[in-house]
Length: 212
Image 1 (cartoon, one colour):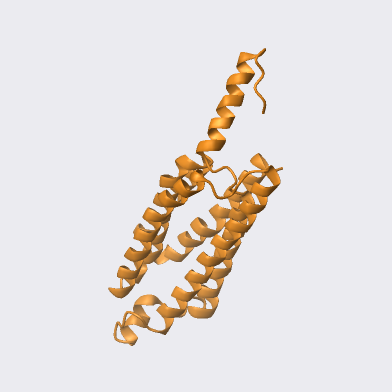
Image 2: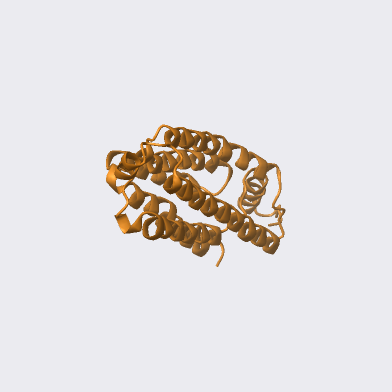
């Protein structure tokens, strides 16, 4: 938007938009949220139907039967499943965001991008380490809760450097994480809602609001 000296109100709006583009990462695509949600649903389906036998294999029972070893076949496969989902989600975010940035004539890698990633990864990496500690100590039923809470914290922390909806998505993830910690038997369900359903809902809202 060009500055028009004959209309101060439009000038202020133009200056505000220029400052926002320079201080915030606005190339985050709603399609990346939808893609991440679909990846999470696929990963959860693999965990439930393939690894856990549609609920026939329960964490506590399995750990008792194998002598409470922290890294057995089930936990390793679940970990690989989660890592694949995470990598696919980040690759999707990069692809769709770079496509949006190119379409709008903006650069993807800017100082705003670096600030966003820095504030995103500090809670995210800390949460990943904490989840590994929980797995090593056999506190498996708290992993879904920890993942949701730390992911929500990372979104809230990074929300000030991108679109405002990210902040509210983060708060939603934190609430779901707390509920997953209270209702432990439904941890996977809350994980599916948080990482799957909420990402898809967020992605659809963002796409129709900013990209149509």
